Length: 254
Ligand code: 4FV
Image 1: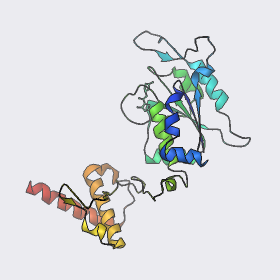
Image 2: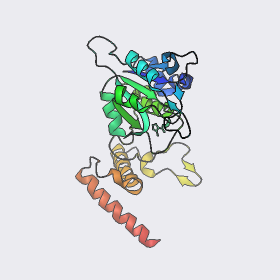
Image 3: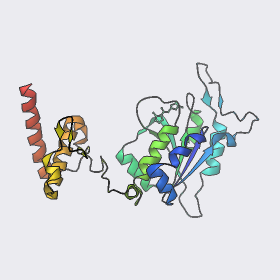
Image 4: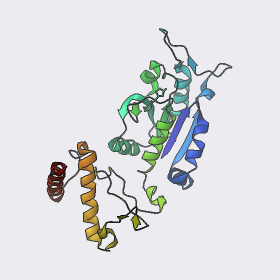
């Protein structure tokens, strides 16, 4: 997979692309990331990328021509016959990024990520050279760079062989539509709190059942909204009923 990023702060990406899982994925050639400076696509001697908003009001707006030039230059297929990259603008107006969106993006091949700054980009960028908008959450950041890194990290974990690079078979939360089960490691007792017996029992079937139950418990308690879409079997549904009853009893005791 090749990901291209366009930003006025390319220097923000270097440490991220050289570290940890993404760094190893790039090293192993499982992921190619090219970061481009939007100012290289400006034409004025001040290499300006922003201007005052029509209609007044505070702040500055990113001017369209450099973006259009950048996307037209970088947005072609990497080789003849290949699909052109998906052109994604990171913005609060975008579709909320979630596991489903990440999987979809990962299955669509190359990406061209546009990182806005200031109040945002001129609307004609969206109307001319953007395939989709993505948001990482309902809050306003100063730039699209961190959201772009979130996309790169999340999508890279979908590339076969990347998560394996972490040396452990990590099971991602949400992969099964549920929150993750609790994790424990040494020391065996912390602040008087011991590790659940089953986890040191060596009984792997029991450990799997415990992890599934705790994933259901955590999801029921913290993100019940996920349960409707989660792929649950009859045993899961029975477990959820039991857990809901247990939680009610506990609530009753308080
Ligand atoms: C954002 C988000 C975000 C808005 C104005 C950049 C900022 C500034 N992007 N998810 N939330 N972007 O806040 O993706 O240009």
